[in-house]
Amino acid sequence: MASEVFTKILVPVDGSKYSQDAAEYAVKITRLVNAKLVVLHVLHQPAYAFTYSASSGSPVAIPAPLPLEVSDDEKKVGKELVDSVRKIADKAGVGVENMLVEHNPSVPDAIIQFASEAGVDLIVIGTKGRTGIKRFLLGSVTESVVHHAHCPVLVVR
Image (cartoon, rainbow, N blue to C red; front, top):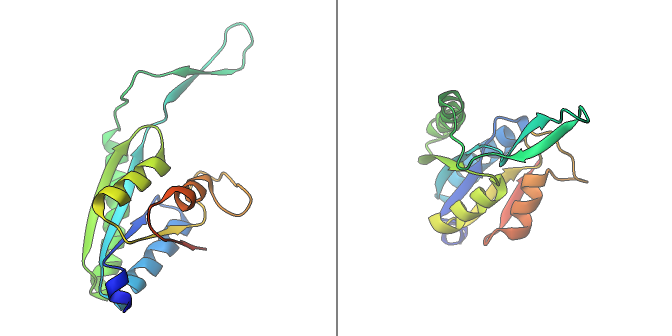
């Protein structure tokens, strides 16, 4: 019955320990239910640049020209992140589709939009990402995905 429920599972990765744990868990679930695993890394550029105000000496957010380009180094790191999950999945005999998505400025929106457009049945995500932002029990990206995704979200800690 489980294989009828989940046919495509998404795991977003950002290089944090939490996303690595979620990826390993997603591989196990994908294998158990004979689904397809999609590994996603969002190449993120902030919508604002920061500069220092000459008058106050404090940081001031200024709108940056949109769209900002993602650097080749960031693309390389993103590819390495999704490829590392592919290696784990290959060892487990799980088919994987690796995706890099450029999105500005919202990582949660990119994850949610991708999941919806790709027909994902389940999102497996870590409790916190590499931003280090703590919001009660969940990271801000995870919290937003949990609240707005069209499908079930499994949070791994």
